[in-house]
Length: 284
Ligand code: NAP
Image (cartoon, rainbow, N blue to C red):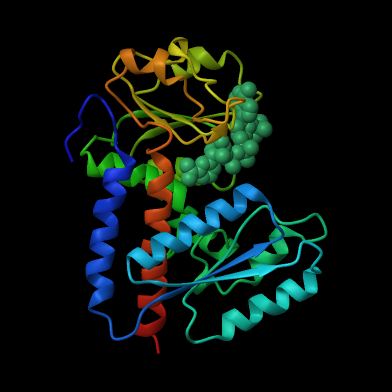
């Protein structure tokens, strides 16, 4: 892909990936299937689930959304997961997070068959990621690496600063950058003088969850900026963790919000579902 007006266009890249998936899926003897479990009626979660299942349909992947009551017990949810683990027609299982308080998320994730764990959150997949490479790796961090690669932006030898160390974004992303031979610095809420540290980055990742937190004083001239954040402003609009207006004039490339990392995450979820299918069918 060619960078136009400094924008790393996640929507365009995700469409390219989805076209590749569609092509492969069209040649399969039976379609892959993703089952998504949605517990309760959290508005943001139901929007995410809808987007995921629509993307599946576009690529010829079957999608099933299982909606469960907010008050469901942990045992009942586990029973549903065990059913899906056993179901030969289900290749990917995704439990939309967050879950209600009565349910322990780690317990649920540990009970998903690791071969069907398309979110890449199962401890076995996380362990493999840290050791070398997992069969299924978390979608958002993979999406970040993929967008840089599709734009042929070099990673090896670069200093990558990641603001945010969550288990689903920051932490695994750092390991992936290390694998790509970058030099990695993790930052978090206890990091001292964050703007000075961030300014040393060739590639700066913002995965914080605070709207427009990263301003021009955080960035080095010509740095590459990846904005993972998705935040809702008081006026209802979506905003990233980066103050796009202030930062974009100073940098060489930047992902917008919306239209950056978000669509990449969904494209990688579809890729993971296809991978899970291929792995399961191959071993039959
Ligand atoms: P999270 O679990 O809340 O983690 C946020 C991280 O940011 C933590 O490590 C926290 O540090 C750090 N942080 C918070 N305030 C900070 C500050 N003032 N200075 C420095 N670091 C600070 O969030 P997450 O799940 O990683 O998500 C981050 C953002 O990405 C959210 O906006 C989320 O909606 C978005 N997201 C987007 C996608 C996508 O597909 N685009 C996918 C997942 C998440 P501590 O560890 O010290 O608390």
